[in-house]
Structure formats: structure tokens, C-alpha cells
Image 1: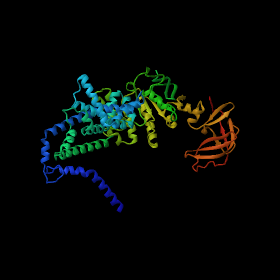
Image 2 (image 1 turned 30 degrees about the vertical axis):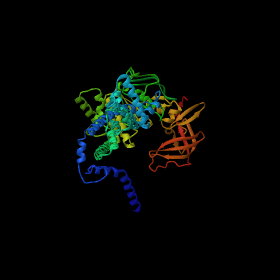
Image 3 (image 1 turned 120 degrees about the vertical axis):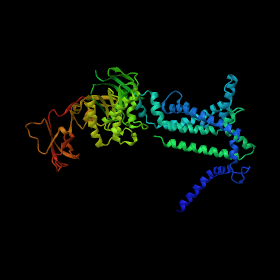
Image 4 (image 1 turned 45 degrees about the vertical axis):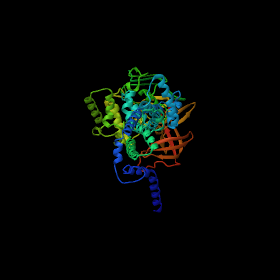
Length: 262
Length: 330
């Protein structure tokens, strides 16, 4: 009995350590005070202020568009890469290919950032394209998100029953139809969770984005970071609350997708 | 024209030769069994027919047409997989309809043929279920319906009964044979179970180490095995040296008696011995009898109800006819 109580207390402490700060942010988003850390009564005025903050809204909209595009592109390319890694038994340079796909997961973002910046600057000088901003940020995010999708898809395909695909082909399906009607529906949950992973990674990336964003574009994390340096406004608490809500729904959705796998 | 002609087909996986220069002809309407232990190449041979493997050498003709370069989805062949390979994300009816949809048949025709195929395997009211909601025997029948609905010239069955429990297996054996005869199709079946192969097939091939050791109707392969391997693999055999050759003698061909066999009509061979071991199998018992020609296995039906016709350490006489033993080539 005593042991069980102790275990519960430890558990409660652990969860408090993890989630108390987040709970505080949510509570303080309804703070009346101008100061972030002083409680002065309930108010929704900072929520209203955020809704009318043009800079914040356009940064959020940019981040959302980048996240949608990069997650979708990374899902397609990562699916192809994961498929090859799981299915093509041996080809020249297979090990190298595998390492290259996984490398962005462990590569310091600063290194990726500086190398991408060099590439984009060079390409802009030679071809006049791409303009730094939305497109360059999206490309950079796709580059490191592919790895995460590929790993999830590969893991799912490794224990995939190959005889299902053979049965489809035996029944007259071309390899492509087999992929669309049998393989893809069965690994869709893995692709879905890969997409969600890529989406959240893109949404809160700061370091890489700062290297490739150019002068005009400002994503949400960049705006938050710069406004924190200038002195925080309680709107930050509101924004944090919104992001927590979004992240929580993504997490729940991803868990649900993974459990639904046949 | 035979439905299947295999001419010198070989398949290697790295250093292992799974199928070694196999020649085989299968006639229309046969229920042909490929029989052998694990790793003998029987499944690889079946997969060569389905097109999942390509031969390293030799030719495979199905219905007179060379199958070189023909992918699985263009072969007039369907396969029932050992694991059944039912699509878990589709209903039973969609599983059966899958192959017909690939042919681009109109919806009405597909629905009709799916219903007929499900009725044929007695699953008419299970169409809307998921495979995971079915029992093992029902899944096996869905897999069968899914392959048969395509009306293939040749149906390949990979260990069709291995995943079923014993009682169900016996009934399903007859069911498969009935379907094969009714539809007039050619079945090629892979099995490791010699009883299954013997009771179902019109002809069977015994395989070992990628080669076919003997082909023939079950009774011929059983009664006239050509090699020690076949004699030993199919049923039980006493292998006796006879000069510079070997004889195979089935345990049930030997008469077991307490008294010395009468001199007329004279059995060609008789020998005295002592029972060293008895394996009681219910309907019959298997006796190990020590004789001057070595330990012989003798099988005798348990006709008397009290069972114990013979005891261990009992002195007995063994006798067999002149034509009871089979001379082996190897």
C-alpha cells in the first residue's frame, strides 16, 4: 500500500514537471495584466489582440502553408524512399543510399542551413531562381522531413506480408495496381503518421528556416523568437496555447491512425 | 496438348539449387501433387508456374504457350496461397471480386459470379464480413473461391490443408477433389503430407534436393518405388540387401504368425524372429521383429478386440510372397 502511494506520488511529480509549465501558459493566456508573469485577473483581451495582430497572423499563415506543402511532398518522396529501402534487396550503393536518406535526421541543422543557403544563393546568382522565401523554406523542410517519413514507411513495409501483393498480381493486377489497391491502403497509416511528423517538424523549425528564409518571409517561430527578444507580450501565451491545442490534436490523430492499422 | 510442360527448368538462389533441371508434363484435368520434405524445391517449382520466380534455365509451357517473360498477372493460372493471403482491408465479397475487377467486367456480371463462387464454397451469406471475422476453414474457402472465380486453366495450391486442424482437413480433402472433378480443372498441389498426396492426387511427383525422384499414380509410386528415397519417403519400408542390389518390403506385405507357416502353398520367404518392440496405433500395430536378416518392421491389423495378439519377446514367424518385395534401382 505504501509502495503504491509512493509510486503515485512520483508519477504525479513527473507529470507535473512535464505539464505544469504548459498549464501555466494556458492559464496566463487569460491574464488581464500587461506583464507576462503577474496575474491580475481573468480577461480574453490578449486573445482578441492576437486575432488582430496582422504580423502574427500572416506569419502563422505562411508557416501553415509551408508545413502543408513540405509534409505532403515529403510524404510522397519519403514513401518512395522507404519502399526502395524495404523492398529492393541489393543494388549498387544500397548502403550508401540508406545512409544518405537517414543522414538529415542526425545532421546538425546549422550545417544543413549553411549548405542550403550556399546552394540557394548560388542558384539564384546563376539561374535567378528560386527567390528566397516560401519556396526555399519549403524545399529545406522537405529535405529533412523525407528521412522521417522514409523511416516510418520502411518499418511498416519490413513486416508486410508479401504474399498479399503476390496474390493481387496472381489475380491479374499489374504491379502498379497492386501498389495502389493492396500495398498503399495497408501502409497508409504509416504514411499518415509520417506526414503528421513532417508537418509538426516544419511548423516549429527555427534554425534551418532562419538560414534560408531571406529578408521578406517570417514564419511563426521566427516571429515568436524575435518578439521574445524584444520583450514578451501576453499574446505569446495565447499563441502558445493555440499551438499546444494543435499539437495535441495532431498527436491524438496520429495515435488513432497507428492503432487503426489492419 | 498437355496443360503444363516443364523442360529442364532450373532455379538457383545463390549457392542453393532449389530446382534442378526438372522435366515434368501435367495433363488436363489432373489433380497433380508435388510431394517432398521442406527445402526439396516443390514450392519453388509451383512459384515458377505462377510466375513469381523466373527459371535460370529451361522452359515452362502452359497450355502450349512459352511462359518466358510473361508476368504473373498475365498468366492463365491462379494460386491459392498457404497463408491464404486474403486482403485484410476488404470484405470477403471484395476479395473474391478483386480478380474480376482487374478484368474490367461490368458490375452486374461481377456481382453474379462472386455470389455463385461464394455459394460454391458454402459462404453465400458471409460476403460482407472481413477476413479477420472468419474461422480458419472459412478463410481457406474464401481463398479457394477467390482463385476459382477467375476460371483459371490451372489452379495452383500451396499446402492447401496445412493450416487446418485434423478433423477439418479430412473433410476438405474430399471437398477439393469434388470441386476439381466437377469443374474439370487441372489442380497442381504442393504438400509435404504423403497421406494427403496419396489420397487426393491422380498422379504425384516425389521431389528431393530440387529433383523429381519419381512420378506416377499414388498406388504405383507406393507399390513400385524405384529408389530407396522414395520407398522410405512414401510409407514405411524395410530395405533389405539382396546380393548386390536392394529390396524394399512394405511392413503390411509381411504375414506375422506364431506357428511356422505351412509348406503348401509355399510362401517364397519365411524367417523366424523375436518381437522386440510394439507400437500400438489403434487399428493396427507396428512390430519390430529381430531376425537373422536384421530388424524388420511388420504391420498387422488388430482384428481381435482384446488387442494383444502378440507380446514383446514372443517368438514369431514372418512370411512374404515371392513378388512382395520391390527391387530398387539405386
